[in-house]
Length: 298
Image 1 (cartoon, rainbow, N blue to C red):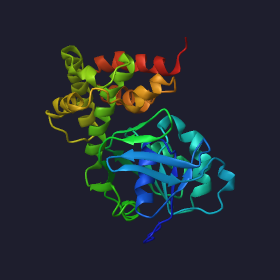
Image 2 (cartoon, rainbow, N blue to C red):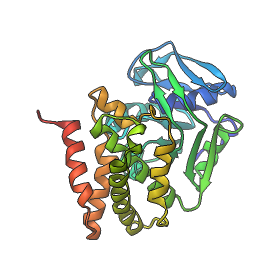
Image 3 (cartoon, one colour):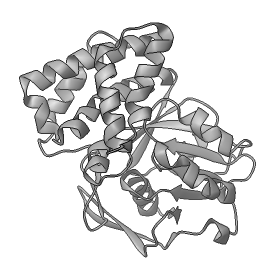
Image 4 (cartoon, helix red, strand yellow):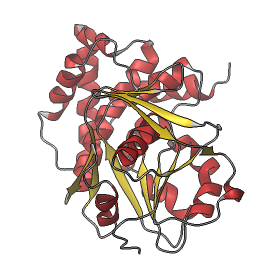
């Protein structure tokens, strides 16, 4: 595993999350290699301080990568991991750290088969970033990542040291990851309703969300997460405190008729619940609806 003081970095998937991390690195004088599906001359991020322009180009051909890097931030969605595999093959040498900026609790099992000689470090992303129609990204809050407290995390800490994207180490990463998963799971209701955060101000949606989150909490605890009874209400409160027009990535994908991360964000709770013998009546309805909204037919 690399221990570079100034690790070389690539960002694969310069969408909302990838652009935010790339901008943080660029502002600190550590402009990363940018890799994606669409050729672009630059990335543009708007944050509270103004515009950040990250020089490109965004590479679109893995065959043109000449050297591997020390650290890859994999910022593609779980539905795009197989498509990103050629980038991982081109960018990774034995020991390259692959930090997965992705929803869910299954990042390691999903990505590791593509990089058998590399440590895979899952991360929980705690910032609201939205892609605008012109392709720029609007960062609507502070950028923060949580990663498990492992040796590989030191390379991520070094890469983002002194940037606007803070990194926190978690000894109990399982609990952190499942708490975020609960938040992501209930955001799936936004994709089904076609509405933004303001919908959680409705009493009926708030109650449905609580019922769903309490179901998810039982599954999380069975998976080893240490989360209190107050967590469902805290998550509903956080959605109600959001700007009414704040969306989510799964809603954006639904609006654009793209495949949804329904299995990563919602299906996993149904699957793990069944494995533990936990009743999941809300999941039994929500998951098939999200799956059909994503994959059809019809």
